Image (cartoon, rainbow, N blue to C red; front, side, top):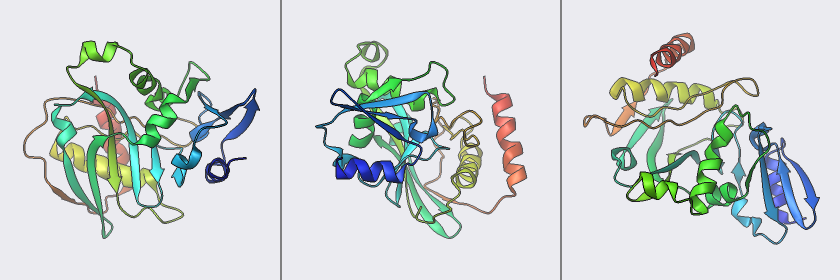
Amino acid sequence: MDQYLEEFLSKNDSLSLDNIEGNFLLSNPWNDKSIMLGFNTEDDFSILKDIYLPEELIAIQHGDNKIEFIYGPLEKSNKEVARSFIFNYIGKEYVCYFGKCSDQIEFLARAFFEADIDSRSNHRNLMFLKDFFEGDSIFDEIYDEPIAISFFIEGDFSLPDFNYSRFSKHLNFYLKFFDRKSSVIHLVKKSTSEELELGVEQELIDAFPQIINSQQIDETLLDIFGVAEETNSP
């Protein structure tokens, strides 16, 4: 087996591998039974080096210092595409910004197959990206200049027990505090509830800060805040 593919499987132990007529079929990425990934055995799997698939997130993690949330095609001139800021959390600095999706996301999106029409995660947004990368003209009809966008957070995620949920709830609180129309990270419990989706909304305010200094907020209050946001969502 390819060394890099073997390392990818080891790092993401929910995956199962089948070799079918010269093609690799990976089932259950992100511990998500609605997704399969199909690759040619000759593909260059070095692109997946150090990639981790967090079950709670519609995202991939690049090594220990960057998470890339899978977003989707968006108009290049959208105000949110230009947004960037620093999030200070538990004494550490995290750089947050939107940007063109990585080659790794494109590689996974092109390999996507729908394993189940019912999906807790909206198939991690890979279906839309696959259509985009394969030239579906619908995006040119919707947007003047569509680009595949991701939301990146760079910082220290090296702790073996890093709590993605707690981090994201704190970030969501401040995103909505400074801009009620901001995109947020919708979190779910592992394997049992709706998966994360980074939603997109328009009409952003101009006063969003460049640096957000987070305080530790009681998690019960964060959960109440999250429920209130979901209740108020259209």
